[in-house]
Length: 331
Ligand code: TXA
Ligand code: MG
Image (cartoon, rainbow, N blue to C red):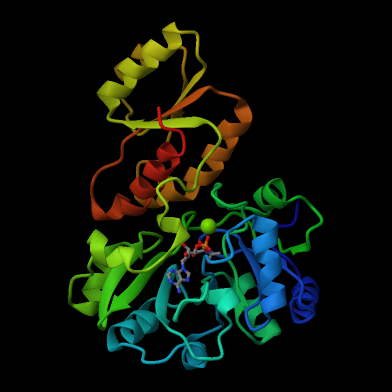
């Protein structure tokens, strides 16, 4: 695929396809989405068929700007409005009480709707050309790794399900942070592209992360095993990881290691494993993560050992995705 980004003519074609009830895969700054007209239940139903996703899982509605908030949501808490003003367009999804007309196909029959303004020029151009909301989950098959390029979308869904817009590699690389509201107070539903500290700084108040509040709201990104590669994954601190690698190698297994350590002694101790040096910063790591997992799946290694990431706010989304990838294949 040589094009880095698609043309106005292709965007217009994609918008027309959406208006006709078709499905379009499109780039966002987080991951690629699989979109349909959010006001058309039959169009939205195709998304669930293509993904193999249970129909009661709600979708995020992508909108062109904050001016469309009231069309979809009501009783908007002041905290939600502040976050939208500060972080849209951007990797933040707000789960709000829906307007009565919003189809159950989009909300999974819940009284709330997830809304986000994506920060990718092509996604915004598509939204403007289309003129409505685009319901879009990540453009992968259910439970699998989200695509961060148009080529990944084709790997997941094949070439002829509809139309895929080409917008280059996703800049953020993990999904949006999802915030819900309980009695007007913000609750983290899924860690993602914006860390809690930045959100809390704008609110001047803490965001709840406790499990009881999260359990009251359903989100498939919260399933224990999600974002899963086919290769079995273990997440370990570097010392344990090297020991584990030696054990597996001695059993004749093919082992890959996603390391943050730059210590040559560690690397030497794991000689024989495929040693992948991951970026040192959380932003760099996130951008690389899904593409790296995909590459490793294709490479045929038996086991992936991932060096645990710091237990800090900046690494929260990455730690979350790694933990879910590991939960898919209990050791
Ligand atoms: O970055 C992203 O959020 C990407 C891009 C394409 O925008 N989208 C994405 O969609 O990750 P998806 O469907 O793979 O994950 C959306 C999550 C799901 O876990 C879903 O359950 C949750 O958002 N969600 C959507 N609407 C919700 C609602 N009304 N209540 C609770 N959770 C909701
Ligand atoms: Mg997804």
